[in-house]
Length: 604
Image (cartoon, rainbow, N blue to C red; front, side):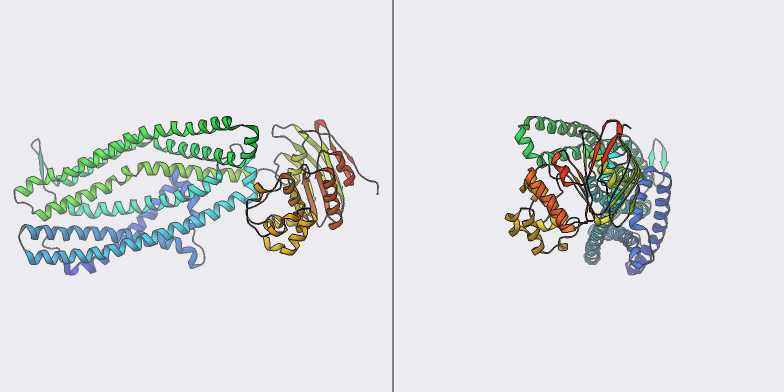
């Protein structure tokens, strides 16, 4: 141990060292981060994902992410300083043992114990702060990405983009977690490695001696050889590990595709069982699983090469410092404590330099995560930019002007449709299969991107769209009846009354029972829940897409009559195949081939 190393001044010196290094590191980190985000593709991807969370605002709370990350960097630097002091304490312990100096041994053991206790508290604090930081980041990103996915109905309109994304649910649920954890691990790990590299290089430089190779003396040989050894190994490792980026991306895609197929089979279990389609589903599942296995084998073979190379480099590094320093120890040039400290310094320098090599497979998976998350943002943006039929808000009724609806291939389904429905009117749309009835309804809702014209109708909660199989959300029957309003929108008494009106009186005692009602109720019962939703929400206009297809004609007549009695001012816009619907509506629209149509309206 150098004679100039004075433990009495180390506390104050360490504080100033940590603060000075933190200032330099923070400035350097900011500069490097800016360069990466400006000049690298993955850096720009990171900025796009992370900036909404780190963007400072006018309040102190908005600066918390940056402040917390800065504190994490400070803890990382403090950890490095602790590691440096540990090597000096270890040097003193081993030197005292070699010199049989018991008082010095006890003194250095006491110093080592104090450092160890401080290190324990530092590790616990760092773990807590890091965990909370990642938790807040995940929460903010999840909220932001879900908001972006929902904005402009991108979650639905994304199906009409040029390259729809696979499994957006998995990207939001899993990839955000991976992104937050990996970003923190890689950023703090890189800073820790660089600071450790500089700190322990100083120690290694002090303890390194000359080495003669082929008659040429190399000064400070240990330091020079360490850097050359790790840099060459890192270059080779990057070359071996480069294919891991693509393989990890494909692994995420194939795994998500397989999981989606499993969920889809579960959601359609009854239909599959009725058809006896188990073997077809089995082949589909095994085919998707086979793609996972084929890609996974490629990951295994590439991983064996990459991990095997890294392990060989690490194992060789374990004996390397002893081979270089042993001659100096046996000659008496250095003591046992110097040997152990130099070995520890070499190990830290080696590990710091090797961080980027050892983390390459993690970075490869991280790149795949960046691609998947930014891919979702790209599709969301494309979906939000798709054209829609402009909708003007009005208090009641529906007005359609020059509405032309086309298929995605450009074929016209409805051409230049214009009509007016006043408060209390009811229109039914008929037409052959594929004539464009549902596409017309989607255009009126503002979803269908292949339509032009204009629509004027009540918007927001004053319009209610009812599909052939009404959507039943998680929760109670009251939640399903009030949807899209919150469950408290309807009282329990009112919910029971409405259930009686739509002939679901056997469910009145289950109003607040939470269950998977979309599995329990029959298609006809679910359609009656849809009519109950109309009665509860009392919209100004209701659009019904074959909403009585699972009901008999008598019940269909009764439910439509109930709506007309309970909501006489509600405008109805129905789609259906049955001719019995005609007598329940005041207007009849027939969709004909080649975009033609025929409207029959009463004479006022």
